[in-house]
Length: 178
Image: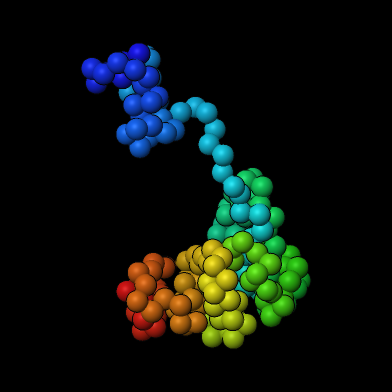
């Protein structure tokens, strides 16, 4: 077989040696495309999503949660206290864990969800402890929308390039983010 480069041999071998182990050349178009064979991915097994008691952004909670669950993750929801939380757009979600009781080492990832209500965590010592412990234990830490201000105020974004909802720019910079 020929990959169109004039060399004889297996196209797959040529693509692998070129650093493209999961690609193939289409026999119809001659275009290099992703190999249709599924690539084995290790899913994140357990994710803690932290939402505000009120005014969290519904879609910033529901969409990531649905994507994670579709990939096999167990998603646990935390807030200031366990119970029903109210989203900005009207949805309700049940927090089963108080953030004060959350242990970062029980999760593969921790995600702080945004929305105006996330301000309750900006200076919350439990939120800061959870965020710090997540990084210290080499877990994935995420923050959506205005929630990166939680990480900045916890001292975790000093010297780090960070992005957030535009309203948080000055807060991130004031707390050391670049």
